[in-house]
Image 1 (tube, rainbow, N blue to C red):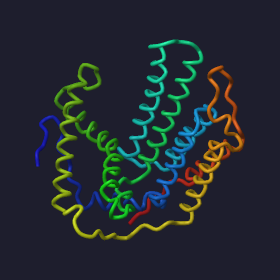
Image 2: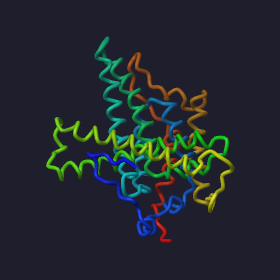
Image 3: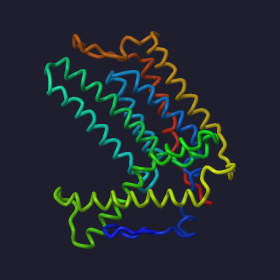
Image 4: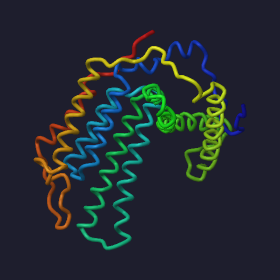
Length: 292
C-alpha cells in the first residue's frame, strides 16, 4: 500500500475502536430504507415548486432532521458542505442574470430557481449526514448491487474528503505550513486529491480481493422495519402525495410556481405547508446510540 508523502499516515482501526463505535444499524433505530423514502419525498417537494414560502420551510425541516439525527465525525460535518454548496449555487444562479438582460423579473426568476437547487442540495446533505452509505448497498437486490455500491461510494465522498482534509491539514501544520491562507490552498488541495486517488485504488483492490460481484451475497443480521420507521415513511409519502396532487392540477397547484412575469408576491397554501411539516416527523425523536 502506498502512502502519500504529503498526508498524515492513516490510522488502521483496531478491535477497540470498532467496539466503541456504534454500528450503522444502531444509529437511531430507523431502517435505511426509511431514509431513502424520506429523502425521495423531500426531493420531490423541492422539485415541484419554486415558491420561497414552501422552500424555506423545507430547508428548515431538513436542518431540523439533521440536528436530531446527526452523528459525530466527518459524516455529520458533511452537511455543512452541502449547505455551503446550496447557498453558492443559489448565488451563482442569480448572478448569471447579470450577463444578460437585468430587470426585477429576471433576477426574481433566477433567485427562485437557485433556491430550489439549494433546497435539493440541502435535502441530499441531510440524507448524506444521517444515513450509513453501505446500509443502502445491503438493501439493494443482487441485480442492482453494483449501482447501489456506486451510490454508496458517492454518499461517502463528502465524509471521506472531510476526514482527509483534517489529516492533511494536521500534517501540514506540523511541517509549519499554514493552510488557512488562500495562497497555501495548493499545499492542501494537492495532497487531498492524491490521497483520495490512492484510497480509491486501495478500495478497488480490496473489493477485488474479497471477490466483489462474484457468487451469491449473504446478509448478516438483516435490519427490520420498526413501527416508528413505518410511521415516518408514511408521513413523508403523504406529504409528497399532497404536493404531487397539487402539481398535477389539484388544490394549491397554482401557487407552486410563483409568477415572475409579471412579478407578483408568492402565496402559500396551509394544506401544502402542513404537508411539509409531515417531513419533520423523524426530527421529533432524537438519535439514540445503543451500546453493544
